[in-house]
Length: 158
Image (tube, rainbow, N blue to C red):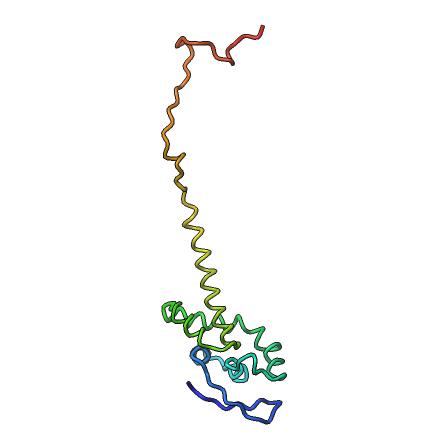
């Protein structure tokens, strides 16, 4: 993994940040689209939530959290370009500590689940075969004048 030394604008102690697979792919997606990747947010993506400083938490709440779905959309494009490797994606997410990038990666899988659920009802709308639908029912038609007993609706009241 790539190691990047980050120095928070509010603190003077440098922190070593290891970029995960997801963060590197996200950064490349920004470059492909010709966008300037927000490095201060990308540097925070792989920091475990339990190691957040008060400044990190403030940055997360104010800037990164509102953009989580934008990051998830870009990462979803990467996921689809890879051929939707759900099992490998879940395995890589399982190896990450709880961090913002893990949340964004999980959003991608959540989005895929929702899409799959949306596709399933289209298949369910097919008529279901029930035992009653398979059962043959014999019905005799009524023809007046065939003889036979008088029907209740034919009886004269007066």
